[in-house]
Every structure is written in C-alpha cells, then in structure tokens.
Image (cartoon, rainbow, N blue to C red; front, side, top):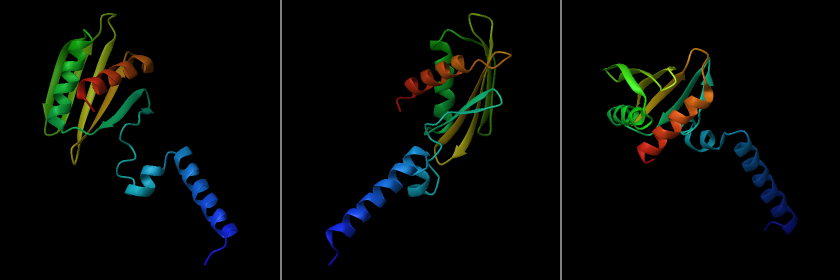
Amino acid sequence: MKSTGTRIIIKKSILLLCSLSILYGCAAAWFTGGGLAALGVYKWIEGRLSRDYPLAYSDAWDVANKTLENLGISISNSISEDGKGRIEAVNKDGKKITLILKDQGLGITNIIVVVGLFSDREAAEEVHDEILSMSGI
C-alpha cells in the first residue's frame, strides 16, 4: 500500500507531464503516435499557410471552390487530377490567391493558401477560416 506522500508525488508528476505535453503541442503525438498532431494546426512555411482538414479530397475540393465563391473571389484557373488540385483566383483588390490541395489519404486533405505576391498571412487565414466554416468541421 502506497503512502499519501507517494500518491501526491505521482499525481504531481503526471500533472507536470501532461502540462508540458500540452504546452509543447505534443499531446496528440503522445497518444496517437503523431498521426493527428497536424490536424487543425496552421503551418506557415515560406509564405504559404497550410492546414490539414479531416475531409476526403473530393469534399475538400468542393468546399474550397464554394469558399472562394462565398468570399467573392473570382476563379481564373482550376485543375484537379489524381488527388492533387490547384485553384488560382483573384480577389476584389486584385490580389492573386492560390489554393493547393493534396489528398493525404485516410480522409485527410492538406490545403495550402497563398495570397498576394508578398504572402498576406492575414488574408490567407481568412480563407482558411471560411474553409473551416464551410466544411462543418
């Protein structure tokens, strides 16, 4: 039988480990082997705002197109082939917007948004927020 002091130390140690894993964003990686760690997280890489969505590719493609329509963004070019797609568009201010979709398998699709020549992160986040809203996730 463990003493009360030992139980308190164990509880505090578990609490500390959980807190650290949450602070460093690794809780999902600890419990799922990393498979779900990227879902719902934006990644800003070289002017591209990327996010994985728990959507089949065809559903993500439809949502991406509807999102641009809802935001009043005109599509100038759209190509989808073999689980990869690219939508090029222009917003009301004349900024070029590019959405790149890639099927990651297992019902997950990665969507990258690039806005403007100098990568307007705020505008890219707005597009992602609308995608999220339209997807019903």
